[in-house]
Figure 1 (cartoon, one colour):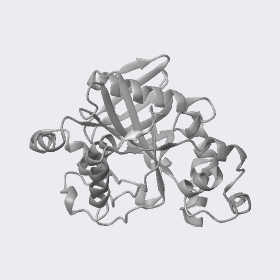
Figure 2 (cartoon, helix red, strand yellow):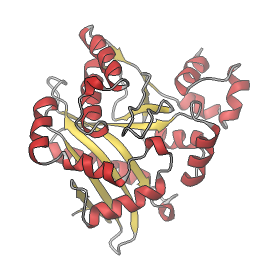
Figure 3 (cartoon, rainbow, N blue to C red):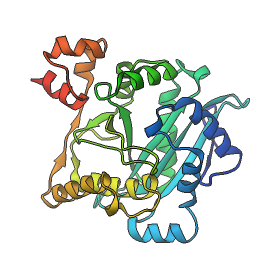
Figure 4 (tube, rainbow, N blue to C red):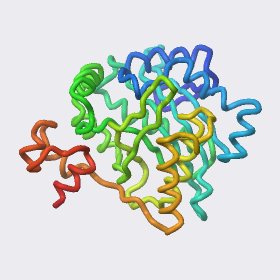
Length: 295
């Protein structure tokens, strides 16, 4: 347990116990789209990789890592929110002290919305990772819903549960410093019962300049291999492996990946439906919309 200002932060790296149960209850209410959602057994399997022979095997493959769930509460026990993430040092960033994390899930309890809690939770996540590995810099990667790639049904359902429109959600995360990675991201299937999710964007908090492709390749290799595929061979996955191969090729050529600021577009885009008239076409995804607007 740790204190962050007037908040109490608890974390766990096992899929049982009071902290995990409190996290999972809040998470289960907040996330509703089936292909982006882990079930309880999925979390248990992921967190088990922090321990035993599988931890040793995966550390030999990918380097040091840790996956945790954390909860944040007021001193009187009122729940504020929670997060699940996997983090690792980035030795590929030679000469710099950096860790990367994939913020798999973050939620603010509905009763706490409108109180600046997201900003506090992001700061807690950053400080937790910095303390975990003793680094100077933290890059927090996260998936975001792409308003233009989502189906009408998914758009309506997720907006209703979150209490915020998808375009407004992008504005909120942009204010937290999130920049869109200019990379056609597809989330591999979380289990054999899931489908890959191509309705997502990939974003990062903590960077404003183009990312070395080597850094993104290293980060995604760890995230996919451990947290998404739960230790299964990454080169056997038809969605994850082509992305890694492409990034490795870019890495070998010294390429960088642009980070896009959606703020100029979002400042004048009232909602998704207005994009067709504003841009002269219906964009297939946000990356295309940002580029079209810039032209």
